[in-house]
Length: 329
Ligand SMILES: *[C@@H]1O[C@H](CO)[C@@H](O)[C@H](O)[C@H]1NC(C)=O
Ligand SMILES: *[C@@H]1O[C@H](CO)[C@@H](O)[C@H](O)[C@H]1NC(C)=O
Ligand SMILES: *[C@@H]1O[C@H](CO)[C@@H](O)[C@H](O)[C@H]1NC(C)=O
Ligand SMILES: *[C@@H]1O[C@H](CO)[C@@H](O)[C@H](O)[C@H]1NC(C)=O
Ligand SMILES: *[C@@H]1O[C@H](CO)[C@@H](O)[C@H](O)[C@H]1NC(C)=O
Ligand SMILES: *[C@@H]1O[C@H](CO)[C@@H](O)[C@H](O)[C@H]1NC(C)=O
Ligand SMILES: *[C@@H]1O[C@H](CO)[C@@H](O)[C@H](O)[C@H]1NC(C)=O
Image (cartoon, rainbow, N blue to C red):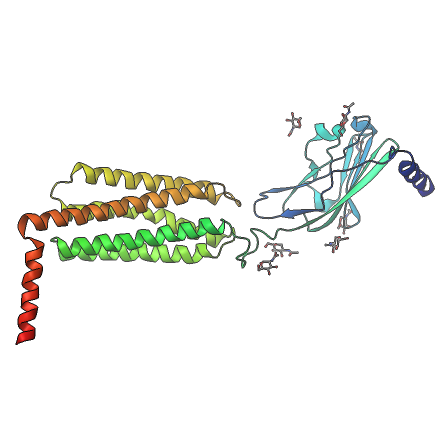
């Protein structure tokens, strides 16, 4: 039997490769958390002649042991019990050379797979290694992050900036406007809360990989950002007796930024290689921009109030005079 085989192979090499089946070359397949419930084991023949599965015979081997045999004559599939879920990716594409298998991720053992295809008197095989992905699964690594480094840097910067801006707003309002002690305490506690959320989220997220903790991290960064909307409102209530239109617009824009950030988060959290990292960044940056405008607005209001009631220069001169007096004495 093997003599015949050798003859065919020899004939194949001599006679324009007519007895040899060729395959799309896939040296290895990486399995990672992006694969989901199933893994595709690729096997694609490129030079079939008859294009009918009844003249085909397909054998799949794992580490040299058969686990899946398709006999085209009887249209019968035999599986090893440890590969119960193995099935053709698309049975109707088999006559066109697609002998790829779909296997549940649990059954897809790591190792070397061989796919042997025979069509009438021609045959060939392809081999690849199924291995753990270096990306996404690498928990400890900086080099294979979930987000691009630039995206990660942007997300972390925007969240730090938003916390910093909140404290600037709060301190400015607390110093320059009347605020009850209760309100001061309430706003400080909330400020500490968002700072802690941001810090925790950043620490978890900064670890990089597509891990549960990194996902929780970005969730803790994005979801509590909603607190910033009512916070800005409460700050404004100390500045204005009645909210002017501009303040209302700022609040609405801040809420819009939040919606964008959460939408981006939802798009990214399900993807190992997120394409929508920019949406999260845009949303957070939007929140920051609104916060910065809000801060400038509060400062302008303070400036105009000072002009109305008490010229600031005079106040400065007086205090300078006081200081001189102290120094002369
Ligand atoms: C498929 O093969 C198994 C044994 O390998 C046999 O018991 C079964 O009857 C076959 N089925 C068909 C449809 O030929
Ligand atoms: C199934 O495959 C495993 C590992 O490849 C092997 O140890 C086992 O003997 C096979 N079982 C059958 C029924 O062929
Ligand atoms: C199999 O492939 C054919 C042709 O590409 C397609 O029409 C069909 O929907 C596929 N079937 C499955 C189950 O994917
Ligand atoms: C048979 O399938 C191959 C793909 O493997 C394709 O290139 C070829 O055109 C097909 N031939 C016919 C007659 O459909
Ligand atoms: C698969 O085959 C390659 C090359 O033949 C070898 O280096 C590798 O160790 C094999 N993998 C396993 C899991 O046996
Ligand atoms: C592959 O990755 C999984 C999940 O991280 C791990 O449990 C398993 O031990 C790894 N296997 C090998 C052979 O490295
Ligand atoms: C994970 O990343 C570390 C550091 O970059 C590297 O040394 C290690 O080989 C990686 N692990 C895998 C499975 O790629």
